[in-house]
Image (cartoon, rainbow, N blue to C red; front, side, top):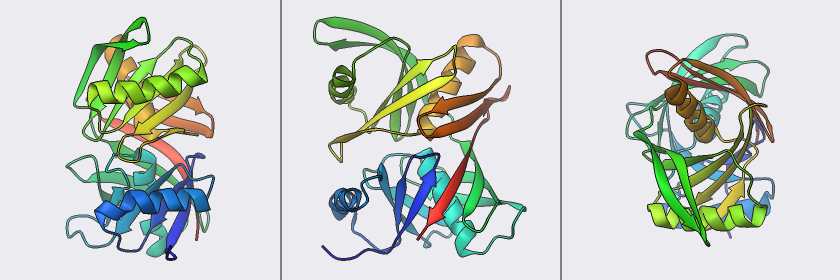
Length: 259
């Protein structure tokens, strides 16, 4: 395999490799698998470009899915490349896979390679309940759909093995571009994300999931019919999700970059 020019991003432990080289779309899953093997902490791979006239930076995830943490990381990479000053918030526009409209990210440079990012997340396309089957059991579960990612909100117990098998089956049953199961402990504000990307034929127990956090916050907003402002505790740390009365959604986290 050739060597690749990439940046290692750590958004709340959801380790993301951002590849700077031009890689054909059909080759991206293979390159992603190689880089995840080379960087065993990596949970996902995206490819970044500076070729979009209507955005500051363009991002395509290896599986074509939408990822909020990778979007935040790409915006922070733009801030680093363009030498944003310390302690001054600026807006970066990211064109990303899995959603048709560019995404706005507010970036604050806290240290040389450490950033705070606030993503104006796309509004979900749909929220509903879906009947799913696993082995002999029936599940009626809330599902939140984005263009490039679906998320199931799950508040009961499930073994690791069953969860890993169920996410693959349910992604196929739903014909999902990518599927997350967000295991929610609402009382403790604890969220444990499991994500499966069919194009990569792999699943990840992610340290943090921005789109899943957004889906969970939006689900609670719709269920309770009131604004949401929650710090979810995830395996890699905290992500904050806000949903206001206008249904605008903001996700805030921190990113550290390493070449």
